[in-house]
Image (cartoon, rainbow, N blue to C red; front, side, top):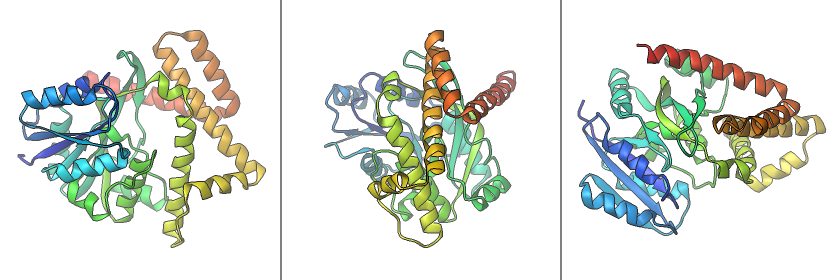
Length: 323
């Protein structure tokens, strides 16, 4: 298969990890690639690092723009890309060398596909293992996809694992420039346009989790945004008008008490669970178990589900590694 694949990276203040991301692109076993990197107004040394790589590698394109947000940066990168297929990579993540080759082989065997994701290995800032990202644990074939869409479930796929047909994404207007959740929104709008989305149940990237992203308020806002996008998906399905994020915040404030309890218990359980995973990887066991305790207090079912998914993922990945 000799179709050109454009790897598109949106970078903002990414000096710490961008080199590892680019290096993982340059060692891909699939030969027909270009690398498009959008510097979205970085204020650190990201641009100079990118320019050094572009000077040494003819297949790297750099677009430098004022800070406009990740959705706008991804749209700009897609416009510059020449490939029929776009492979997404975040500036702090790392691809396995066979990622593009394996995904394009799957695309060749399933030509009706519009988007293909995969699972991932989670790592910390210094490559410490933090478990596996195996959501969703479905969407492996067309039957799974049809069942998934009938249920009206929102598509939660790790964005860095995704490769999609550029034409299909442009047809639906590309990314909407949200601060968070632009990927979930894109996936759902693709599905609503009857585009086929599947996932390879195998890790093809290393997904990096930062302490800074766990400790600030962004995680709480991203949780609100994900629910806002699900709410608007329902609005579109029922042919109702979408609401703004501020209007959705009002919906939560005015919700009945039992609904508020479910919402916030889930929010804090997921937040503390993520922190527990991070501290386990850092071998800070007192903080890890403290976070796990708070997560369990907030919503024990979410904690049990998360642990069970990690056990299943470990079994799957162990079997793959023995092949």
